Length: 356
Image 1 (spheres, rainbow, N blue to C red):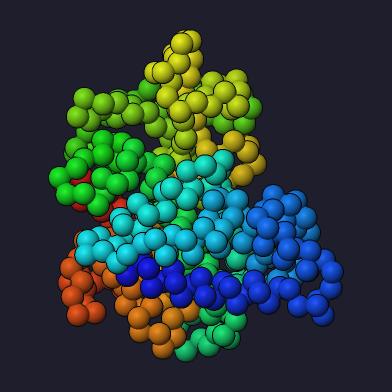
Image 2: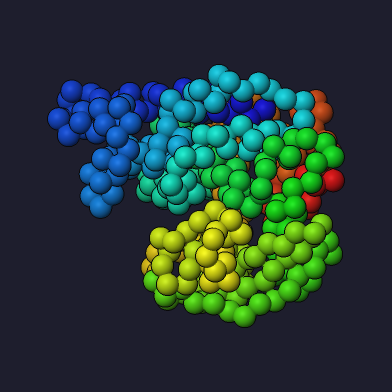
């Protein structure tokens, strides 16, 4: 189960970050570790964001971004201690378990994205390469970092789901339907297929946010008497349209006007629009596809690359893959083929399965 992955990863993380406090490495390294220990994540980010060059500095920076996202080492250990293995869907239970940890963080998804980038500076693609080629030998340290990056990617995928669902607890309760989650799946399906089989989708006029100078297409998805707005952006790499990750509502003139529910405001709700998480005009757009899909594929690759002879770890990640692929996992065997990458169709089908 996911609990075994988290427990193993946290042991690795403790060893990695305790190694950052060696007296022989100098006062600056000790200072960084002290800042991490006392939870001064903003201070570590300010110190290292533009000057990290060594593996230790990138690992400290990644840890600071995870802490800033509300997922510090202490938070994760507490989550593990408070959690129990469940008989149901492993990934859905994991998502439900971490939601409270990130609830007070200002930008958890963006921070986890930056944490992953810092890990990749250390690993340089070795995790994905090793998962494809068993003959590629990783050092013990590389395996450790692959394992923790896999955890951070799993956290990022789980966090992404909390943005597209209204109440993630419904994912682990039979018979419960989260209309927001259902509408999100419909929006993805509509963008990729030009139609939706489960919702009514209405195209709206494009809008441009002045601060970022970014223009988005829009759709409104209607399901079960509720309506949800989505922004659509073109992926510059794939040249495909994708559904943008959003959070709350803001005006076109100012992102700082962001509010959770425009229907609760006493002023003109018609001047507020669903607001993109990414407000940086130079940063890569955060879309449901490139966050959720890439994170899941990279997470499973990284953890499998790190597992080595750890059969419990392999079994845990294979069970999660089996859950998402819609199979039944019994006696370490999945009823469907899990030796492949997830596709957007797999994600849509998985989301829909949570709403049956």
